[in-house]
Length: 129
Image 1 (cartoon, rainbow, N blue to C red):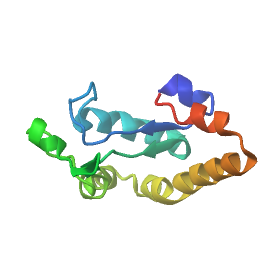
Image 2: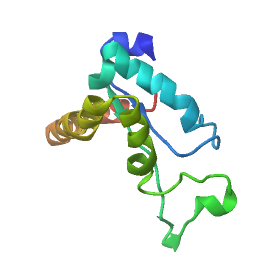
Image 3: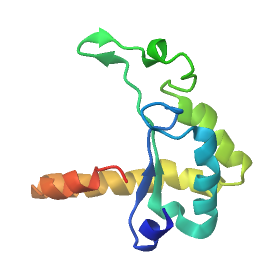
Image 4: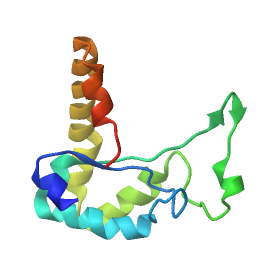
């Protein structure tokens, strides 16, 4: 992460809550890394997110039925679990940045690329790290 951040790139901690499935690390393993990077001054270059699929091909979809240990797979996971961990670690300013500044900047960047017709740039920025 550090070498990427040092180049000025924005990284994302995506798929929070998919603890241990699909090759994802557990959230408990991610927290110290995320907190350490924020403490090192990289909050402006970090986003956090998670995936939640409520329907698939028009049918109700519950990943937890296939993976019963997947207890944090629900739409409000970031707000109920991740943000409180960051608050407890004293990362309140970073939380504000995640929820406001970083998300707004990324949305503005995407909209600029979309309006300009530069979809190639959008595709390259959407690849996971």
